[in-house]
Image 1 (cartoon, helix red, strand yellow):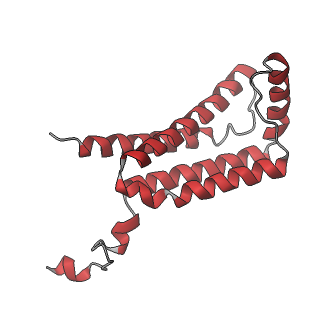
Image 2 (image 1 turned 180 degrees about the vertical axis):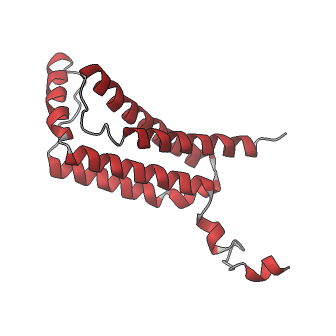
Length: 159
């Protein structure tokens, strides 16, 4: 009875704090923050100076696979936009619906692959490439979101 009186009511009957701060939403936002940190790491350390020449070399060898090259401003604007859009989707993660779990799983897998690639290339080259410092944080945040969604899926299965 006391808890019902203390709860802020919304039209759906869910308290304001419960509306957003759920494990999936927080895990989603943590991955967005890790992604933002990773973009900052890449931008501050000249990632495009490494990326663009590799892409141009790939285009010569594999003309049917045309990955894009970027100018710094366009690259940064694209990534900032992606981070903002992804962060705005975080409240939807609380619903644990199939499509948001699939989208979040894809987001987490792409971020995991990104972080792992930075670490692997750094080991193979014997030097830290731009984005390597933030990669462990990106990996941890991606694994966290995957784990939260895995448990959310397991919780919704009939027993």
